[in-house]
Image (cartoon, rainbow, N blue to C red):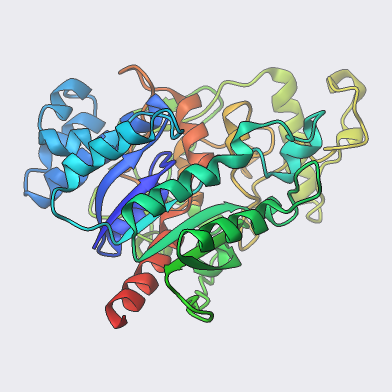
Length: 418
């Protein structure tokens, strides 16, 4: 079963659907760094499938260059990552590229979700125009053009829960506009708010997942069983070496001993005996002082740090009424963490490591684990030089692969039954 991934990002949805038995024909993504990540993951899947995995291992340990790695990917697979913006100006060029890749294959499924800033409640609250003039509000129309052109059996459209309340200047619901447009293109669409924590992800992440069926009728939306993990967030950190702020390594990091099951059951850990991108940001003495205060408060009765509780000498924001929880510990003794979002690329204040002795924010690998990306998943920058900022941005924008995999298996079941 073949699929196209639109607005792919780093490929969290794709990773889940590949695990679920679907074949990616193309990924379309505007961000160059994310496209490099997609290419690196394409190399991973190609080399693993063909029993020639060593070059990938060499690459993520910095033994060969990215150019050398990409030289091992077949031309058609390289071209399957399309670095273009999805818009009326480019769509026909993208169609041509995908058509040449798919040949006689039909497209069974389209997945993806346009950038969410335009629908995000936080995004609207911070924007003086409440995102009303943002062109990203209408990217669903471009998505619909792909449905119209390829006529897949199903589609999966992911977005933030702010979509449920986002409205135009005239008070029209964007969600209802989507449903009407998709129906016009021949798709009956149903949606639910799905929570990542119910899929075995140790993160409180709610997303609206729309599923559309070609010529469908009411009542096809799959039911998902709740996964009980019976572990806490501390499991994420258990086998990773302790780091101080500003230390760590983009490349090989060997594990500490681990006797648990969760990391293997969730496919975060696999057959490798090392991971990568476990590298901590440097922090100012002021930030480290605040982080220590935040961890102490949590350790003393699970109290969250209010911005107004910070000593005045450390306060840098005049706004003391909103976003007062801008410094937050990723509590190891809870069953799930706060939502990992792209703002983590700006600073780590909302993602403080729970170990007071390490006194730092999360590394890209720790954030990726909370999203259930496997430890052999490598996040790229624009150039060959690794970028912590680009890695964080891609991780925060992604769909957790473990959640995507569950959706994929259910959809495969439905398609086969059809």
